[in-house]
Length: 305
Image 1 (cartoon, rainbow, N blue to C red):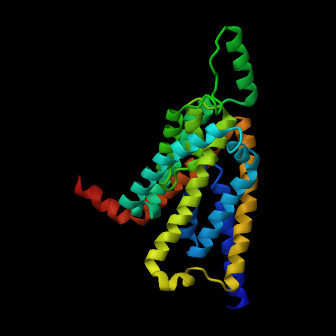
Image 2 (image 1 turned 180 degrees about the vertical axis):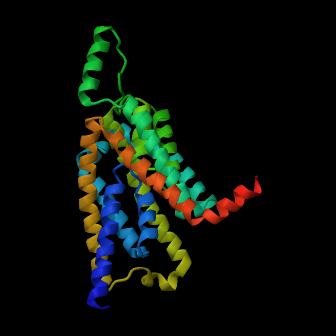
Image 3 (image 1 turned 60 degrees about the vertical axis):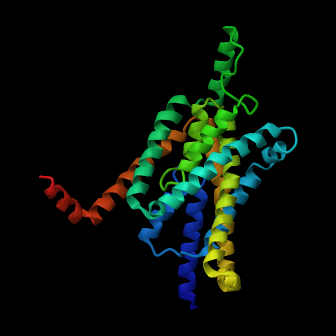
């Protein structure tokens, strides 16, 4: 492979890694943005690369929440049960949707609609129901002065199994392109009155089995496709592998920064600001789809005149 082609591939891998790292955690949908890039540029559609990029963002979650994850297995064990309960509807709904509607994964129209839905969720839920840390504190004080002894917002101990199931269902639906997993699950948590910090933590705890499970399922499907005798061919252990590893490192670093930024925006009650971008890109995707099928649209309208 010549140097020019190497640099072109490296550039595309870095772009993919950056988008994966940003959009996996910020509420703008990684699947939707990667689909947009796939249509705009000739991005590499490589099994090894995709697995490594997803593993990069998975490690970002593990490192960023390392103390909280350790606590789950020591003194915060209730959270582990909630994660298991929430993951069950996610797995069922996600697998059913992927099997019944595989074409949705590459649909620009569905992606545009998903962007708009995510924006609406952020506006209607995060803007109206989310609280900053100071607002939660003063609201709690006000309730205590009135003699109210129940939780204003829920921590892990007050979170119910029904809360976990509801958030898990929402995460399962987020397999649809353009519908942000982090945006929809954090919003679902806030809607169920989880406090901002715990809503975000629970959202990303739920993402761990999802990302790991999706990678494992993709590996299994590829094994079934190529057969046992060609398993080695799935992983390109050549000069390109170094480039892909670099992409995984980039997705890890960018993902970690994105996680930090998201937590700060959530504490400040500003997560709904991303709705502006989602409305813009969602409208653009739908318009793009309509432009490519304009002749069909005109023909359809003429039939109903």
